[in-house]
Length: 124
Image (cartoon, rainbow, N blue to C red; front, side):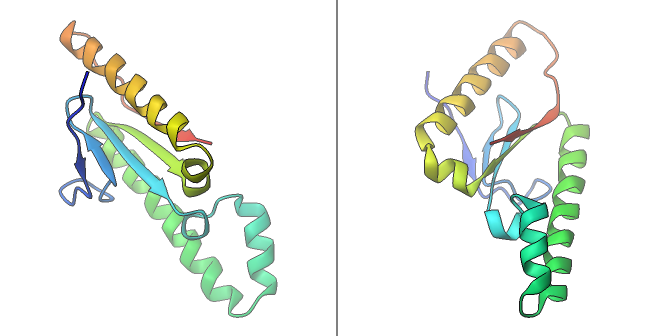
């Protein structure tokens, strides 16, 4: 089953990297640095580094904005998938298969008239 998708969709909050509209999935591929992967460790390292206060505030703001966009998209009925850059690089096939499986399930649910569950899924 082929899937229609759009990339870099500016009409949705957060400008998702990939949108599968029929399945109501908004996919974000979050950069490890910019979105705070392993935040406790990264935060400790940044606080000791050059211009630490700036980077801590910048990444904390990004994380806060991500949570806001997640909430708004959920309220609009979207399933938000957030995948770390390192996860995609380590196993792009696994990530693609997961997205395809979720999309197929959601399309089938919609065809049966079942309500699609909104939510947020962080893929690690």
